Image (cartoon, rainbow over all chains, first blue to last red):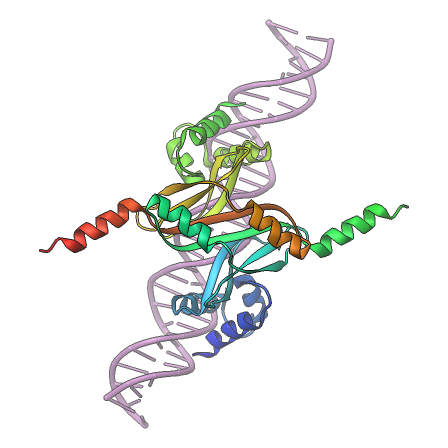
Length: 134
Length: 134
DNA sequence: CAAAAATTGCAAACGACTTGCAAAATATAC
DNA sequence: GTATATTTTGCAAGTCGTTTGCAATTTTTG
């Protein structure tokens, strides 16, 4: 493992949310070139250490987000107000996906799921400001 | 409805699979500028006539795909061999999503799901070629 | 430690998509 | 129905996330 790959992997391992290349490029802008960050991400995903998905949000546009690869994968919620992720826990779709695909003769190798909306913190802020007069 | 918007909407309405801007630009390259196609897609989605999702595939890269907006939305499977979509039927995730979000105080406004792998036709081709010697 | 292999930084390129602007089409006013 | 205001379009240039060619540096191997 080179220094760049170690930095990328450890950052994602310690993050509590999916991490984008842009975030990593910002964090390591004085240490690694963006090309190196992108190549490290590809290398780590190719080696099975990372998983990723693409998500579009109004603040950051369309970006790929990375998480550590784990045996039992999780899914995420993305808040349209604060643009942070909330962990939705372990995947609960496997049985349903197996049924949908078996019915149609499909060999499913992966699936992507995420939900978007407003997180509890942002919802609370709205309620307070609406309920408080003047 | 202008001619460009009508063309875009009718093409998507008649398609049996999600349609990308690139496909529409190709189809109407002698009639409409790509900018017009993109603006028509934005207009129609804004007016609630279309839904879209982003998907990455090895052949076409990262693109947004559009489908007609209908009351009961569907989900799609994408084949990594032939890069076509298979209809997975009406969404069966609503109850599960409602539970996951309620538990966490999240207000979910939409969700994205798709599966990828090998479709039945491509799987059949592989099996034949593997089983046939010489 | 030298030679071979892999990785990096830089700069340029790529592809999906967006935008400014002037011209063309469409809608509205009279 | 023709003048005027509004919307939409095509073109060209630009943006943004990401990729790539290449020479230089680092790492691995013998």
